[in-house]
Length: 347
Ligand code: SF4
Image 1 (cartoon, rainbow, N blue to C red):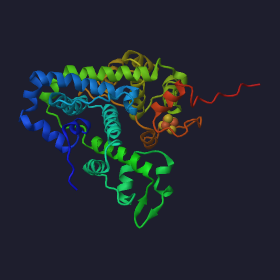
Image 2 (image 1 turned 180 degrees about the vertical axis):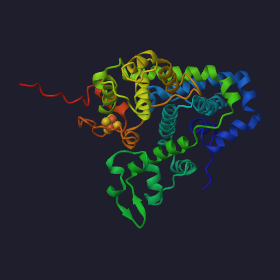
Image 3 (image 1 turned 120 degrees about the horizontal axis):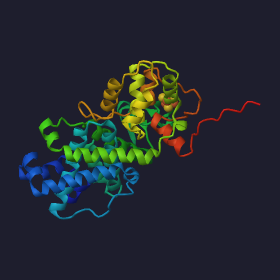
Image 4 (image 1 turned 90 degrees about the horizontal axis):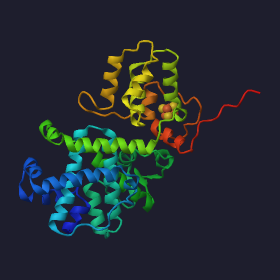
């Protein structure tokens, strides 16, 4: 079925090929565009777009401005800010940042999709690879879309399957459509941006990285060692006890401490407790993991699944529950939920 899109749809769904074609009408190269007046404005919009993706409201769509531009220039800025935000997070080389941006874009697009008539909804869903046959998805497609969904109800063993198709309630189909948008956008990142272009964009990339670090500090507040997840507590205890920890253990702990807002000096001080402490080497490693050295890649602490693979998950106090990331457990504990189990006092 033919569906007609209007220019406002390009602003709502900037990932559509039609939106990209609309942007290419001027036949400008990215460099020429970025040097132009509208290009500079679009870069500011792109930084702002990433800031919105980082804000807590950004994930729920609550922060979305319901007034979309209706003039051609406004729409061009909206679509180009989408494209440029992808370039900026690709230059930042930070998976957590890419994750935040793609979640935000999926929420944003889905917020608009909910109000579209069926024909247009179906068309846009198909563009991101989501085709529902009679409220069911083929098993292989289902497994692909739900790979990042942790709730028990999404596990294949808990689903009704009929002739190779997973049956879905209509609200579930909606959730999966949003997830499919996220998965599709995530699979396209990072972009292979020429290093010369990334160099030109350094001031904007730094703004984005600073905004992300600030967000992390706001999310996690003051560092509180008593709220550390058991795996990280075990690594700190090993250091304090004068034991050497493995390379992957160091990586996990350093990335975790950096992610919760500890500065490089404090992290290096913690490593002073290690028997093989070498200040220069430690400083180099910490700077590297926190993105201030080498290729500028900022790392995020490994997920629980990765920690298990590395043999670093301890689950010692049994209080981890269903968290899938040590950072989530730390945040929950800081907010008072999932507090560590208090040991009974000796009589
Ligand atoms: S379940 Fe996750 S948070 Fe808990 S100890 Fe294992 S890796 Fe750490």
